[in-house]
Each structure stands twice: as C-alpha cells, then as structure tokens.
Length: 136
Picture (cartoon, rainbow, N blue to C red):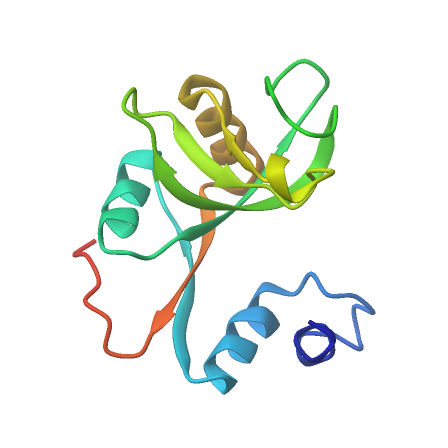
C-alpha cells in the first residue's frame, strides 16, 4: 500500500489525485490501463462483463445518494464491480467504516447522473495486458 501511494505521488500537485500518474503506475506494474469517458453505465456494463472493474469519479450533496457512507462529497472514487438483477450498480466504496460495509449497491437513477455531471463519465479502466476488452 505504501509503495503504491509513493508511486502515484505528484510532487507538483502535492497529492495523490493525478489520474495519469495512477494509470502510469499501473503500467509500471505490468498492467494496461486508460482514463476514459463513458457516456453511460450501459457502457460500463460491457467492461464489467469482460471482467474489468471501472473506477468511477463522482460527487453528491446531502440527500442525493441513498446509502452512501458519508453524507456528501465534492469528489469521490469507488470501484464499480457489477450490477444487481435490477441493473443497479454495485460498488466497493473506500469511505465505508468497516470492511463489511465496503460493498454497496446504489440506485442507478441516482448514481449515474451524479457521475456524469461531476466527471463527465470519467473512469479508470485497468486490466492485465492482452486482456480481451470490449468494443467501444
């Protein structure tokens, strides 16, 4: 964990939030990856079906995201790992207080517009080199 934090530190920004640094660090570890903009969660479904989780950037205000582990955020990252039977997104949310609370299902009609409005659908997609990836 400390090695990863050191590997993605941006000395100019003086922080760890540089997307390009994070993807470059994954490449240094032998993975392939991109920062991409998706137009919808439907596009993310293809990546999930291919076995590639998507790291989403989103924000919300108080009362806008039911079940969130914190009341609001100006910018948040979580890992989209799947969808339930109703099509609602299942995420691993690092803001959870315990390991048991990390896995969360959010309402699609709440999360999708927050994600699209905050980051324009920005995601990290990181996967093993040579992994079969979906067509855009």
